Image 1 (tube, rainbow, N blue to C red):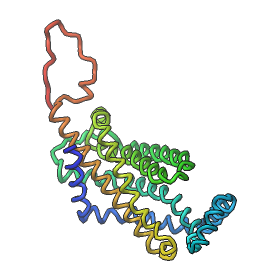
Image 2: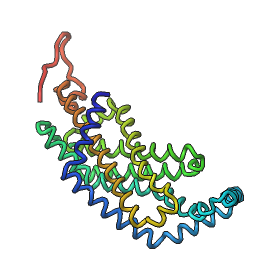
Image 3: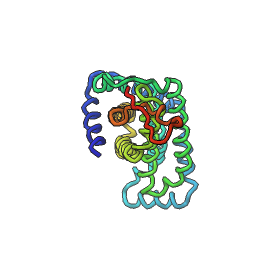
Image 4: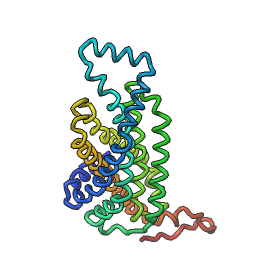
Length: 290
């Protein structure tokens, strides 16, 4: 727990580093361009489809009629656009996470490594292509989980729980890999993930709920619809900053765990996992250090 908290406040401190702030604008620019392009070509069609879907359910129509009777007719007018935003939000978060992982994961790990772990040997256990394929595969699994779980979102508590859990699992998968790709060997990376799985998953879940915080902008209803051109870039940048903090948190934790591992186990894990040679009874293996 002390390592988790220590990594947490160190990640917060690194978020105000000028290099980190500068790097945060690259995913922002890409996401803003993509968001407005998708909105320009598909917004009207998406709202019309959701409106038609709502009109097909008598229960929804009864709810809208009740809202009109109690003086909340404007809420029914923005219900379809809000549902579109709610459905699109997880995709925005996933794309932000993927962009941060691809364009910033190695840069953030390099920054932390240079400033805090300069003496930690870099064993280069994974290439950029390996990390990219890992991130893409994990993202596809997360998208599949989102699609499968969407019917459960109609249950009010679950819509606030399931997406953050899926985002947290994805953050755990992607950012731990990126954090250790340069410094750890494959055996060390697997050992750290196995030994610290509970703490890493907890960090992922916390990060998933933090990434859901910008969704509060959607709750402004008609005001958000009117100010969407201004609030969408703000929301995307907040998402990006939360994910950058998440990447830094995992990086500090994973590299500190790697440092502790090498201090406690000087033998290289790839050697230690090999079958020891047959020795006469009473013999001991010679010790070695890196």
